Length: 295
Image 1 (cartoon, rainbow, N blue to C red):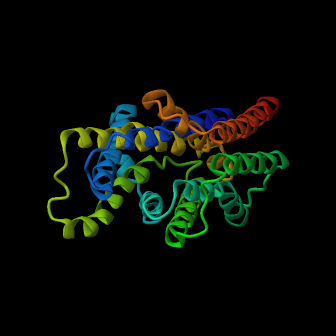
Image 2: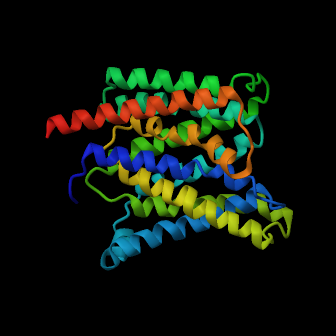
């Protein structure tokens, strides 16, 4: 496997955040489908999308990539699937503001975990970018954060920890290996985790054609392309910086909804989103500049 530059990894992760930011807009168009049904179909389409990417990238090595999966690689699949589930449960048990605010602590969780597991140190600029991004998120959700809904906030923390462990494990296993196949299997794991919640609902898998199209878009464009890019970027970007650069999702989500359905965001949302984008650009630019100087 060829060595990937830091600059290319940054571009992959930022692009992944842009794809993930489409989720809020797509969910706005869901009519009647239950969240579990959407998640079930989204997860299956996610697996299909990543497998199609692998097939198109190197048809001859497609089967070999899955044969090369080791037992520990299934932990990558499980952690990503768990993050999918916890994120959804958080949105349905607390406010979006609470969920977004807690998810913004992802860079800190990943950074601390990477320090102890991988020995990756945090640069001063990364600390500054983290603080700036967290301040931006606080501005975005100001006035919308509530102290109750503790179950939803607990699910959000579960999502933070799941994604942080996923990112660190990718960094631990992935620099010299292709971890795209284990990432692809996360969709199947998430779909299986949805089944116990769907069975008591009887015909809950019978959804309208419109909702099915939205689920397909969520599985392909949003999380499919999003985590393809993040998995590729993890080969050369330190663990703490991956969720930090991925915060472009948080900043851009309200913008797409505004442009597409004319849902005008509050002024604080726009100001906070701009601050988050500045933090992401600061980290990305400084890192790529340092990378060019080292070459």
